[in-house]
Each structure stands twice: as C-alpha cells, then as structure tokens.
Image (cartoon, rainbow, N blue to C red; front, side):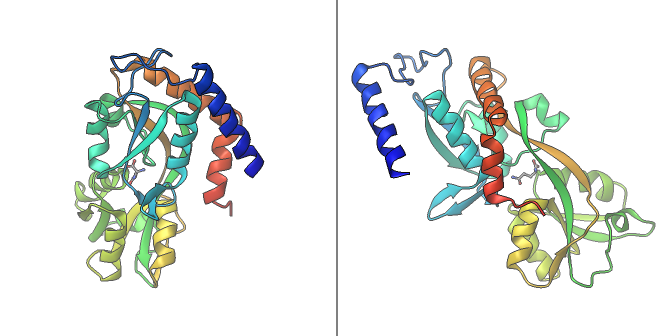
Length: 266
Ligand code: GLN
C-alpha cells in the first residue's frame, strides 16, 4: 500500500514536472479535455450526508458509497473532488443552477426529475421499505392501502418515499404523511409514536433500525428503484465525460467493489 502511494506520488510529480497533467484549465474555467466545471479543476458534488451507507458524516467529512464513487470519477477526470452537503431538496437546484457538477445522493431516477436534470447510467438499485415498531398492527405493505386504513406515515421530504406515499396513501384517503428533513428524524418520530411507520430506502433503513431499539423492517418491499447521478442538461460535455467514466468504472468492477465495502449481501 505504502509502495503504491509512493509510486503514485512519483507519477504525480512527474506529471507536474513535464507539465502534462490531466487537469490543465484555460483562463475561462474550461478544462482542456473539453468540459467545464462549476469550479475550475474541481468536480463539485452535491449531496445530503444523512443517508448511510451512501453518504454520512464521519470525522467531519462526507463518507460513503457515493463519496467514493465521486472520488473515483474525479480521479479519472483529473479533477479534485469537492463535496457540498445540503438538504436533499436543494440538490437538483444546485445542479440546475451550475453550482454543483454532479448530484450523488442515492437519488432515484424518476420521470419528474428527468424533466429537471439528466441522469447518468444507474450505478445501484434501491428498495423502498416500511419500518414499523415491533408488534405493530402493520405487518405488510398492503396494510397501508387496505380498506379503512388510516395511518400516519413518516418520510423524508421530497424523496421517493414521500412522492409514493403521497400518491398511494394521502391522496387516496388512507392516511396522512408527516415529512421530515432527515430520514433519521422520521425514524425518531416512529420511536416516539408520532408516526405509525416510515417509508424509506432499505439501506438507510437498516442503518437506522440498527441504532434504534424496538423497530423492524417489514419483509414485503414497496418498490424497486434505480440510483443514478444527476447532472445539468446544459453541460453536455461534462455529462458525457462523467457518464462515460462511470460506465468504465462499472465495467471494470470498481463500483461493485465500492458498494461491497459498505453493503454485505445477505
Ligand atoms: N432514493 C430516494 C430518492 O431519490 C432517497 C434519496 C435520499 O434520501 N438521499 O428520493
């Protein structure tokens, strides 16, 4: 490992000495390799670091699957990675406004979001699951929409859990939705009895349930989803570069290796 580091350091030095590094930029912020980024020489990632194991704070830094994927992409493109932590809600706006280059946040591809941003190839799948208190009368997803159902459902605001339950439950008169800015807050509301269940992605669900006693994840799944990176529709050169790089990292097994570090196959 040390040897490898010394070797790559030597290579970096060689590259900067010969002046042919992979990040040269001209004065208007455009990289010589044909794309421009929000900040010259950097790949700026927008995320919401409250979604373990995809993104969470560890030692004051954003860690997790998405952070590692972004780091791998940035390295291949010769860019320095910068991660901006924000509300999940704000990611799409940051991308649209050109403040961030790539939104990586366990973000599900949906038709509505596709109107706002371009998605790269999908790099992972997710599942919406239901968390309940042990012994809850809700024993399957179907209980949420059955005749006479009237539950209070906790979700993270503007996530697919929110969008789905709003349509399937609230709008059909099967209950109400309580929206929280973080998934963990929705789970706390379940613990204290403010909501009857929480609908959220399965991996953060596992992480939250492991930390709060007396909760469990129902075995039936709500829906399956594809995660992809969100990018601006108005920067096709950068989109092509990132999307191609991500495809390469999927093809050579790098992405799977990163995911396997965080998620064990049951
Ligand atoms: N996958 C969900 C969505 O895209 C949740 C993502 C998140 O909370 N970071 O809406």
